[in-house]
Image (cartoon, rainbow, N blue to C red; front, top):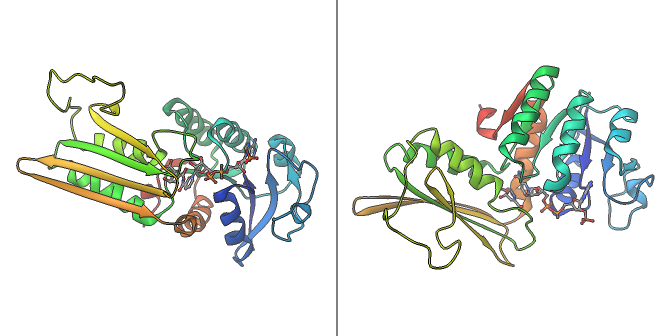
Length: 265
Ligand SMILES: NC(=O)C1=CN([C@@H]2O[C@H](COP(=O)(O)OP(=O)(O)OC[C@H]3O[C@@H](n4cnc5c(N)ncnc54)[C@H](OP(=O)(O)O)[C@@H]3O)[C@@H](O)[C@H]2O)C=CC1
Ligand SMILES: O=C(O)C1=N[C@H](C(=O)O)C[C@H](O)C1
């Protein structure tokens, strides 16, 4: 039996890479796409898309009601990703979400819908195994170093800041340290944003430049020393093993899990 997948955002950088991964995997079967254009066309009719004869829908609900699928894979944009996922879960379709930029309230809402309906869902701020380890190492290190700053660096087409990975890293660190105001108590920004975003005292700095893909440094400071934990994704293939893993794992879930670390054996 193959796992039937609907993908959202097939023309995007992640969507295009994920299409290739799914099409070339004997355990997975692409059954439909959700896009903001090409409604009613077949994927094979769209220039530059793989030669697979599956329908494209602009209306997510129409897709979820008319196509039989096991999993919805969300890889579009923050503005629509939440609604897509909500509709998929309400239609009892298990979901794997890579799209970033959801608020804590949105994640809580999706958690309630998934758990009440007993539908599996994985929200993965980062599918790359190295990034997940980087977040776990940072959490561990923060039990010894209470002063932490995060520098996340991405390509300049990214819509959200800070990145989903940075937000999740800060949340994980907050589980292992007390909230703390960092820096000099009297420090003042003479230019807005100089000290970055502030989440319970942890500072997050977002760099956006052409040439970058997805990178993060967590710098922890102590007496006379610093520890830097770094992860780099040099291309989007780095995320595909994690997507495949999440598609397998979500089949066994009846609730929402936020973070790949919570489904990794
Ligand atoms: N969790 C993880 O490991 C990773 C997560 N991401 C996240 O995944 C998301 C996608 O990233 P990326 O591929 O780089 O972004 P892209 O901008 O390359 O792709 C987004 C795609 O979504 C399309 N889109 C816009 N509106 C809709 C809609 N209503 N329905 C369906 N598709 C729509 C866009 O179309 P158009 O171009 O025509 O506007 C575009 O093709 C981002 O949120 C990013 O942060 C990225 C990498 C790894
Ligand atoms: O937009 C991206 O590219 C990425 N987004 C995710 C995030 O916001 O953390 C994951 C990865 O960093 C790539």
